[in-house]
Image 1: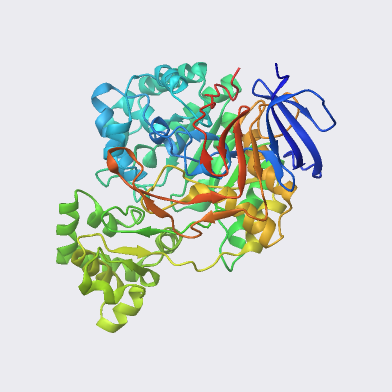
Image 2 (image 1 turned 45 degrees about the vertical axis):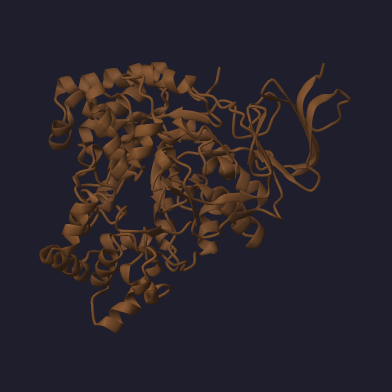
Length: 578
C-alpha cells in the first residue's frame, strides 16, 4: 500500500509566502500536503516529474459569477483551465438564493441581463432544489465540484426575498424588514456563508436589470447596508465585496470607511484599474487604502489586471448600460432591439448623448468594449454585401459615409440582423503601472475575472496566466515569489481561508505545476467560440497552455490542459472544508 497519494518531484517550489524559490519535492496524502522538501523513500500512488517546472499554490479567484455555470461545469472554466482552484460565488449582490419558487424564472432573467449569462443554458442546466440559503448551500455541497467554493449572501436576492422586487427597488427597508434581513444573514452565516456582496452603481448602473431598471442594490440606502454590516461585527466573521461608483468619489469613499468601521471586517473594494498614461488613476485609490489601513480599516483593493479583449454584437451587448440612451436601445427582446435601433428618436438620443457624455460615461465605455469610433468590424454574419467593412474601424467607416460612428454601428447591426460583431482593439496596457500596483501596495489583489459572466464577449478568467506570462516572464517587473503571493496567499487571507493559498505541510493540497517558458493563453486576445453550454448555447473561451498539472485537494483535475474528470472540490463553509 502506498504511503502517499501523489509525489511531485524535482520541481522549483514557490510556496506563496514570498520565501525565495527552491528546488525540492512535495508529497500529498489524503488531500493535504504531507511533506515539502527533503527526502522520503516511501512509495506514492502517482508521481509527477516537475523537472524545470514551477510548483506553486493554486490560484484564488475572488470575483466570479459561476453561480449558474458550476451546476453544469464543475471546474468553472475558463478559470479552472488557468490554475484557479478556489472561487467565490455570489459577487456584486447577485445570485439565486434565497429565492421563492415563483421568483426562480425572474432571477434567471435578471442574470441573463446583468451578467449576460445565457437564459436557455440556465433553464436547462440548473436544477432548483432550494429556497433558503441553508438549503442552497446544502445543494451546492452535494453538487460535483472541480474547484473549491465559498459563497456570499447575494444582497439583491436577500432584499427581493424579504421586501418583494418592486419595494426593494423603490424604497428603503422598514425596521421590520431590516431585522428580517439581518436574521436571514445570521442564518446564512450559521450555514457557512462568507459574508455579503453589493453592487451600488446608482440609477444609471453599468449592469442593469432585465427590464433596464437599476439592480436592487444599485439604489440601496446606506442604512440597509450598514444593518447587514452589524451582523458581521456581531459575529466577528465574514467579509464584504462592494462595487460602488455613484459619481461622487468623496462621498463614495467616505461611505466605504463607515462600512469598514461598522463591520470591523475586511472590505473588498472593486475595482482599481490603471490607465495607460496617468499614474494617479491607480495611485490615488491605493493611497486612500493605505490611509484606511493606518486607521485600522480593513480595506483591500481588487485590481483589474487582466487584458482580455471585448468582441460583441448588439444582440447581446449590455455593458453600455450606464448610458440611458444605449440602455433604451438594447433592452428587451431581439425584435424590441431592432425596433428601437430603427426609431429616429432613440437614434437621435444616442448621438446627442455621445456628444455631451460626462467623464464617467466616457470612462466606462472606454473600459468596457471601447469608444464606439475605435471599434473594429470583426465579422458580418456571413453577409457578402457587408464584407467590405470587415477589418475597418467604425470611425473610419463613419468618415467615409459622413455619419456619426453610432449611426454606423446601428446601421451595420440592423443590416446584419444584430449579429455584426465589433471588436474592441488592443490599444495596449501599461505594464509598469500594473506592476506598481502589485509591488507597492500591501493590499492590492489581482483580478478581476468576472468568470462565468458576459460569456459571449469577454474571457477574464485567463487573468492568472496573463499575469505570470506578461508581468513576470516577459516584462520582468514582478518577481515569481510576489506573483504567487498576490495570486494565492493574499486573496486567501482576504477571504478568510483557513488552510489554502500557500504550500506548507498540513495545508490543503491545491497546487499548480507549470512551465513558465511555455505559459500562454490560446487564443491570446479574443476567445474562440465554442458551443459547450447547455441547450447548445455558445460562449467565448481562452484555453491555457503550459500547465502540467492542476491539483485540487490532492487530486489532479487537469493534465496538460486535458480534464481528468475528477471533482474533488469542496464547499468551504466559513473558509474551511472541516
